[in-house]
Image (tube, rainbow, N blue to C red; front, side, top):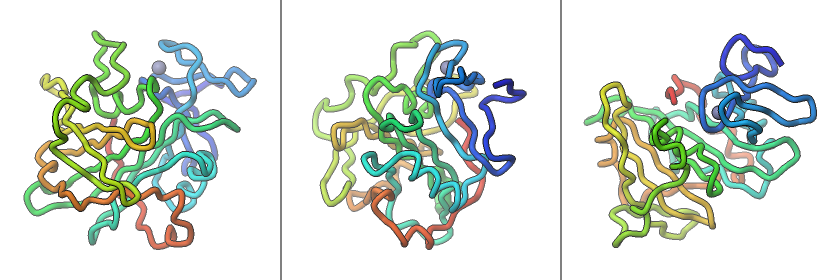
Length: 232
Ligand SMILES: [Zn+2]
């Protein structure tokens, strides 16, 4: 499928873009449900809506299916919105990763983005969003040895269970995003938490709850969607 911008577009300007989970290069549809990235070869495609909306989120949950979580910090603070989400999944198959982002403002940090990613090992999507998949270190697809090293400095709750999170070191080159990256393990998958700006990590408290929205049902209607999606 020829494209004039990264990611093939489906469903018009308000639809969903298809891309590579590991890089922004445009992917080509091979015609048999497979997608190819010029840098990474055959990839499980990444689906990201052009605009965050209720309809697109419903489509996201349908695409992901009931066996893979999409986590959001819960409840959302006043004025916060679901500004972005994405899934790495082949049509008709089990998902490899999901991401959801909530955006709002805090008194200390101003505009804040909180991205939550659940992914199977080796996917490399969390590393890309976290900005740690440096070109000189293409093998770093998963959180490093930091995870599990000593007691976790941060704990969140995932479905009533405490989950430890460890800071993941990120490069701090000029032009890099100002962010904090945390990672742990939940349900046999990597759990990434990416906060921008980096100082927003101070918002994290032990009682932070990550809720699997795929199990939420009608309450979805009450979720506020929209706002500027973060770049990644
Ligand atoms: Zn790629």
